[in-house]
Length: 337
Image (cartoon, rainbow, N blue to C red):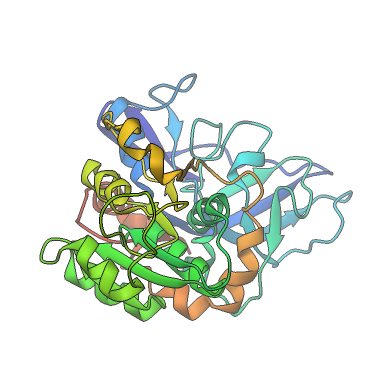
């Protein structure tokens, strides 16, 4: 079968590898779609992930259909459409240092269990949409970390896939959602997926606009006018985002960070003391990988709007270049078969 590997710093190749053999407790999945993540570009740039430096299979956002089911496996049938948990594979994280990658024609799930390694999705859901399950789990964990309540006022910085996924999740939980970005078409998409308002931070004063949209927070011992915003989520990773959120946060607000910051960000905790804010960080999806699947299935047309480019596996190198170049595309999904 064909598989996409990092072969060295800045180098990838589509190579022929042995198709996995399905044992009695295993499930063999034919991959039909796999999303491209910004971290794929990082893996390529550094030449892979030890211990497979220079030979790292890529692709950790896969969806597909079952090609073979071991005799001991219960609850699954050949032809079922499924999404996978890349973290649960016994031979390492799929596409992130493990022995297998989702940009391969097949992935073998050893000792496969429904709800642990994979779950089925209805066959009317496009495979490209199902492949959003993993990044939406990242977004879902970030939302969970900030503990929203119905009626909360939320602002999400960054209208990339994770930011928009979080915006959808907040809206489905009954929050009022504002999305901030500097790219007009991303802000238009934010409104289409359910954001109640958007702010172009390249053209507008974010704090002033938040006061206009969410109202002014009740005066307290926190100095200055503050928007009555309950939750700030950084899904952008730019230092100015945290500076803005921390400067705007009212007493008792929550500031969440799901974005990867590549450089240290200085924080004046003395100035923040009176806000008594809650700062939470979010990484991965400890429980959310299949929790988000229900929302993805129920609202799949909304999630489908996140996809900007569908690229066939034969052109996977272009997909990787697009998906790992900031601003070149929004969400790239590779299709197979």
